[in-house]
Image: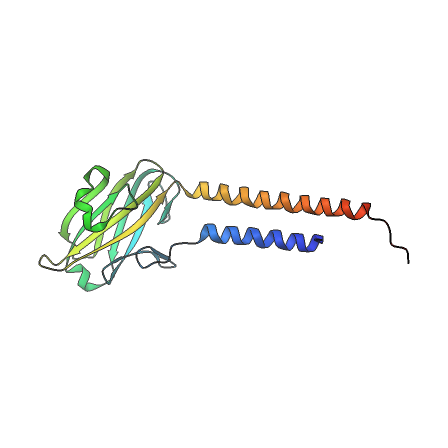
Length: 196
């Protein structure tokens, strides 16, 4: 049935696929995580998002390892965006719609009213108080008739759960594979020897 080499190769391939899926990121325009960091799109304009937790020396966007005080920084990449006003809101619901942000007061963790940021840098402290999914909502406007919105989903305290699931599934695959190997080995021992 299965040789030990095939069993080992299948197990390694299955574990590699599980780990790759666990590390996969949503690559949509609204929620990108590339080598340059997290990006949020407000209309056609991109903003780089950095998230630092209290005491951390590395940007953990978009997956924060644990709840707690956090500083979210948005940096406008384009000069046009720096000439507009920006409104920033962090809410508990990842399903929040940036266009309906004004109706999310009960879910709001942190808020900056519309303001012009000539340097293109917006800094907002927030306290992600419990594990779950949150949304960083940004609305930019020229104060007249043009308004653009964007959203970035941030997960808090979920990375550990994901890895526990990956290792549990990898363990199950290895146990099942080893069981099949032992079953096949015992089955072959019971077969009568072929006479030549």
